[in-house]
Image (spheres, rainbow, N blue to C red):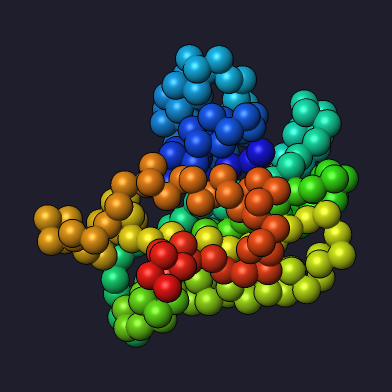
Length: 234
């Protein structure tokens, strides 16, 4: 199981939950000290996680091809990818957004996710049942003013889920999106004042939804962007 953005709030919680469910995670991220701490924490439980330091902003398609080859050589299989890495510099009017920051938001949140996925699809296809899960922010919120390149990328991710599902519907690869409820993470803190943010949940409470989508039970959400909070409200 490849967790992209493993050292983030949801990434760390999901890595722990997936390990508890019996998966062997490959922990991908750019912050090596935090990856090492997570690796040691998982190893202390008897798990055997693998580390893969990589900066999505600077990685090329060849880097992702190399990633897939290393996973194949080390494990001989790949049963799922969880995309939870994200870049959000803060709320800014599009008119005043730095062009480099805009390009970075689109690349890290959308293009890099696809490059990595494309490189790993042959491995995912070889599994009897595999899952490709994209964390996608609530578009009712991120399509409003000031969300910039990050908000545009979220709309693109929803389209990617729909297109990939249509193309892979007859394959073993299940494609879905997860729209997490508001969580107490560094990303959310850039848009909300923490002491006034009473609705946010800790990522550990959301990690179980990641496990559901990655596991065979996720077939019920195939082709969907699943918003568990909305299901409970219904």
